[in-house]
Amino acid sequence: MSITEKISHAAERKAFETVLDSMLKKGQTQDVGDLAQQLIDIIQKIHKGTWSDDSFDALRAIAENPEGKWAHYAQRLIRENDPYILKTFLTNAAYEGGFRGYQTAQANAAKYDINVPWLILMDPTSACNMHCTGCWAAEYGHKQSLSFEEMDRVLTEAKALGTHACLFTGGEPLLRKKDIIRLCEKHRDMAFHAFTNGTLIDEEFCQEMLRVGNFFVSISVEGFEEANDGRRGRGHFQKALDAMDLLRSHRIPFGVSICYTSRNYKVVTSDEFLDLLISKGCVFAWYFHYMPVGLNADTSLLLTPEQRTYMKDQVREIRGVTGGKELYCIDFQNDGEFVGGCGTRNINHKWRLQI
Image: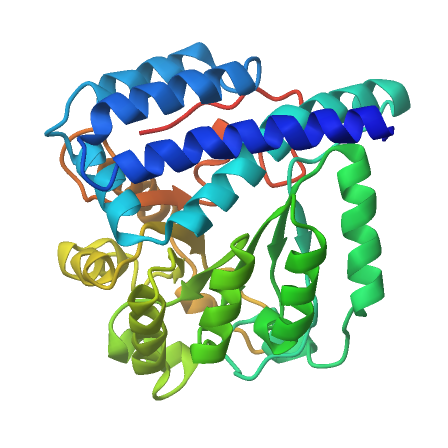
């Protein structure tokens, strides 16, 4: 990138951040409807050609109803979470990834005749501090790790292609939390996320998350205490709730990662469970269906076709325009049709918002 391009990039980013700053400050006291309309207009200009027009029409219809559940959701998101984290995430996801990154990715896809992903999934380590039933890390992990230099190189090369988002999986990625924070510091123009069991989230790490602003987590939980601890080990459910409480006390947005099985699929979509998550400050939920791993994996936890259909319908009801809950839910397998598959989808795929 030339000096002129760097100056132009910095100026554009600053302008985008200034607009977001103003909107987030107004959102603390004003109705979010008008602010949402402004943000939708900005994002549509940035993501022209990436999201379908009917997705933006659906968002505008939601914003026009100040008493609707998603208006309440947006208001809760703005007023209960740290504005620096919200601004940094939206800037990196929408501006760096959706605008500049998208243009770069399209050019590289055409130049090299390749599929440029919008998101990288990376395992900092296969090690884990837990031994959950049916988890591949529990069966095969604990031995392999990427060095900081290797992860840094992958991210640097990814940005050169136009990719500005990274999802850390594992193993337990927070076993490498110092290196993760270093990566967040070095790659200030990327949005980072991690799936974690939550047991390593402490006061010091919360302060680091607040400082960098471009990293947040989804905590793994699989129902109430009996169901959760039956697969994850005694005491994990309370530790996960404690991690949620700590994040909320620092106004750090977070989600949950839920593995659903033939035994817990109704519990993890129940009003009681979702109300608990919302009361803890959770703003989104990933759902993944159980996949047995290892020679002695419990195949009785596999869902029947009817149970998977139930989950597909239930998740879509939860996040519907009306009814459901003020919690955005994504079913990793059943929602593949809306995003063109996993994170390695072609950059030219046109997204459709599903609500």
